[in-house]
Length: 261
Ligand SMILES: *C/C=C(C)/C=C/C=C(C)/C=C/C1=C(C)CCCC1(C)C
Image (cartoon, rainbow, N blue to C red):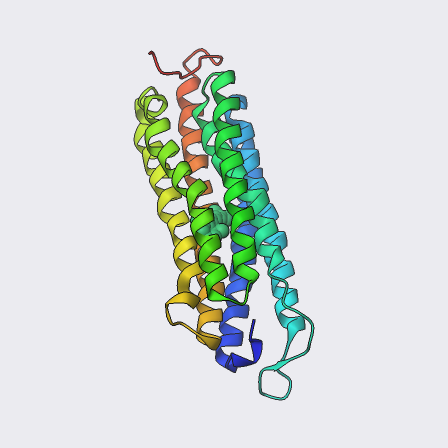
């Protein structure tokens, strides 16, 4: 990463985005965990994991922010690289942990049968982890060709996940209670919409964005996408859990929502 290509404004803008990311993730974690007592026991695990995802992200935003300020010295009024590398692995380690968990949140809040839950969580979680692992070598490569090759490889599990969400979950979603069906559909499209952002941001350096502008666009772009994919998505999961909890007060608490076929 050519850190000295950054202007002072780009450096601070990126630093402020990390700081905002940390604040949102930390606040979201407190909200999900403190509000968990309002949720029926059957849906608490989904909400616990929702808060775990934002907690892991808050921790990594703090680390990213510290790494960013350690890599760059601005005391002279200009951007000077200190020689300490900016650690991009924090982002990928964060994704490796949080991306499978985000899909598991969605599966858990649907409360499918035990076998379905395990099968879908394993398939989707596994594909998500593979997608992140395949993206990393391209992210840290200095050659555009290598970046593109790993983009293509990582897109394979990405497309599989989108297919599974849209087609694979269809029957299960239509078996969901009426008061949450729409919200679950919206959550699925929120996942797809916000996740699409990442492979697009990843390509910025390959489509002519260079130097400080490219670094800033990638870093701020990922941060915005993270906030939508983790905290905003989390609010959807929380709302679904809340509505189901209210509905289940008058229903059999052990009832499973499985497709009738
Ligand atoms: C909270 C973090 C989330 C939801 C991160 C999601 C990340 C992706 C969907 C990343 C996907 C990528 C590709 C599909 C190709 C290029 C490499 C990646 C890893 C950026």
